Length: 216
Ligand SMILES: *Cc1c(COP(=O)(O)O)cnc(C)c1O
Image 1 (cartoon, protein in one colour):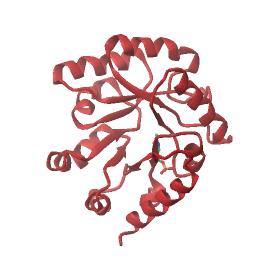
Image 2 (cartoon, rainbow, N blue to C red):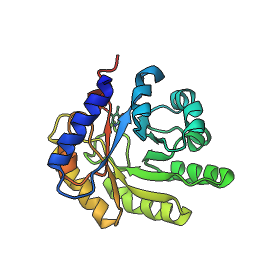
Image 3 (cartoon, rainbow, N blue to C red):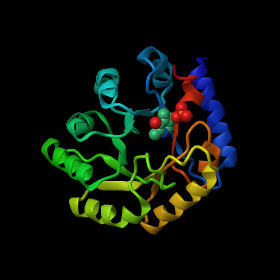
């Protein structure tokens, strides 16, 4: 059995043990920087959700695969520049990084032209960090209603907690914001903190190195 499959199965079991609800969170295998030959075993194994953080890299790695296999769901987890929106709307099924009205509008325009409707997460700068992407929690209400007016299919909130602090506090905060807006999905948890995310009701874990090994 390929190591990536073994790693995924180990994670799934841990997640099951730590999950309070019957429906288990989805696991996005974050394959950024890994070549397709490292990813193929998981695809053949039947895994469905994969994550990339760069539009061009995702396009060259995944376009042919997605044309053959429409069960694969591709998630954009990295920040999106407005000049790459058209390509992103073509190749991805989910975008986790919408954090401004400008970007939301661009995605909406592009989707109308291409007759598509991606599933969207709004990225929240939950630790209120200067250098971090994500919308400030104070500005979230305005972005939420803007996206509603555009009829974007926003399914939940996403965050990357501050690395130096206990992630759990931030996961709790994001969960309660998510409840407030009555979203059904929640994108949080990476290799270092996914069990904490599971305990705080995450529905999409984004896990890279714990599945594929360390990135160079
Ligand atoms: C790279 C990345 C991940 C996965 O990180 P690992 O620590 O390898 O699990 C998750 N979310 C985002 C936004 C990332 O950029």
